[in-house]
Structures are given as structure tokens and as C-alpha cells.
Length: 382
Ligand code: AAL
Image (tube, rainbow, N blue to C red; front, side, top):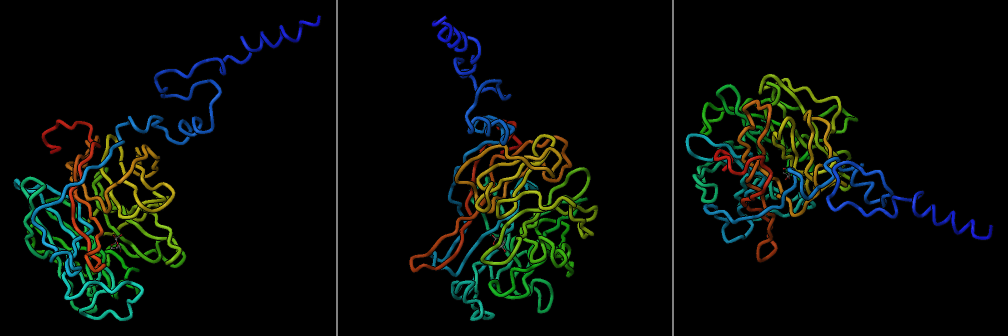
């Protein structure tokens, strides 16, 4: 009888707790295995449906290359290029549009915005215009000139026009952009979205001169701003993703929403489930398989993730990565083809925020390369 407890303990070790004795399988399982798991292993199956972040199709690291063709006045802060648009391919050339500031002096800083004048910028994107450049290989660029000038006061964007993105729709081109009515740092960043259209990517661009995506009503999460408009075509409609902020500085909480339209000039209907992405800064998405993938970087608890929504609305974390492109503006071959099965991306532009020798503030366009495509060997992806 004295030996009974020893016998029971031995039997328990052999049969009752097989999970502890069992080794973890050599291959990382796709489904949560039926065995005792640590908190971290529970999380990887419960929180990251892809389960194998570093091996899934939406994982990539990013390589950066300096671009040829853009001059920055020796980095003295008087020339800045930032917030590029998606890149499009047209008649044998790539096109990109971006915020360009060329001022006599570098920005004095948003906290000193009350000292900004018609010639002294407060922020890096104050007193800016939208310029464009073309390239045959995506590395050497030729700056072509201004696409959208600042209109006269009091039209939308008289103080600054920035942060643009392109839509191709029924043979016409549309540039959406932030229209500032006051210096950034005052209430300038509380800006809505304006649009101009053209028959060719070369312009000339005709301004609509009306707000096309208004800020939300008082109390709404997007009441203060609509930033980073990012149009794509899905289900035969214009899906325009954007960033807004709950709250005001210094307690801004940045999130991303969606507005949908049948016509590029609106009306845009904001999605009832907004916000759809709870982190990130500049908006950056691309059709991937049946759904939409998003590059979510810099701000919020889910920064440094690549997310996926099969319906373009309900995003889940697909992978966690690092050194993501700021203001990523990919070349998205099927941005406007109404694809049912997006091929992903392999490269694009981003901006680096730089300080000159004396601390002057400006930004530079750079190229990024990544591996977020279903077929890297598809010649159309390059
Ligand atoms: C960015 C964007 C918007 C902001 C400012 C200029 O990079 O999120 O465009 O207003 O910073």
C-alpha cells in the first residue's frame, strides 16, 4: 500500500500529462496545437492569425536607396520634398507627385507658428506646393515642375497644398491633397481634402475649388482633420483611406479611416466602422489577394506591422516588422484596375526627415524595396 502514491505519480507522468512530456513539433504549426502552451505561444496563435509572422507573404524588411535627380541646396533646410504619392506607370515612365517646399529660410518650428509669415514657414510642409517627377528606372528622376500651385486666398489650400495622392479613373487623373488655410502649428493642420483633375499625368490640373472630403462633425473622431488621402479602386468604387487624429496636440491619437465614392468629386461616404486601423501615420495600402494590405508604422500600439483585411475594412495584424518606410508611396500596379486578386508591391518611395548641418529641418525622397508581392518575377512588378 505504501507504494501506491509512487505508482499513481508514475502513471500520471506517463499518461495524464502527455503535453508536458511531448516535444514541441519541429515545424511551427499553423493551427494552435492541443498541448500546454506559454502565454507567448497562446498569443502568437490568438493574436496573429498568420501564426508565422516572419514567413508569411505579408512579411518584409525594407531596403533604402538614395535617389538621383533631386537637389536639396546642400541640405540647408530651404528645400524639402516629402509625402510622395503612389507611383504610377504611364507611357513608359514612372510618375510621382510630392510636397515640395522651397522657401528663403528653413522652417522656424510649429511651436513658433505665430511668427510665421508669407515667406517664413512654420513646419516642413508649410508654404508648399505639389510638384512631380518622372523616371524610366525608378532610381534616376527628373523633376518636371509644379502640378498644383497654392491658389489665392481664401481658396482651399491658399497657405499650403501638401500630402497628395493620385487616382486614375475613367481616363482622367485626380490628385487629392491637404489644403491648408493657416500656418501649420496654428490651426493649419486642421485641414480638409481638396482635389484637382487632369486628362494626363502631365496636367494641366483643374482645381475643383471645393472641399471634397470634409472633416467630421463636432465630436467625431475625425472632426479636426482629414490627412494623407490615399485613393484605390475596389469593387468598382473609389476607396479613399485617410488619417485623422482623436484629440489635439500633445494628446493626438492617430488612426485611419475610409471614405467611399462612385465619383471622384464625391460625395464620399465615410465608413460606419471608422476608424479601421488604430495605428500608423501616413496612409499606405495596396490590393493584396482578395483584400487590402496596409503598411502601419511609427504611431500607435500596432506600429511596425503589416495588416490585412480581406474585405478592405476589418484589418488584422499579418506581420510585425522593422525600419518601415515613412510616408510609403508604393508602385501599386493594380491600384486602379479594380482587381479581384491584388499582386502586392516590390518598391516605392518614402521620405527621410533630415537635419542639416545647423539643425535646419527638411525631408528627402528615397526609394524603398521590399518583398510584398505574390510574384517577384512578374515583369510588370518591376
Ligand atoms: C505628414 C502627413 C500630413 C501632416 C503632415 C503633412 O507627413 O501626415 O502631411 O499634415 O505630416
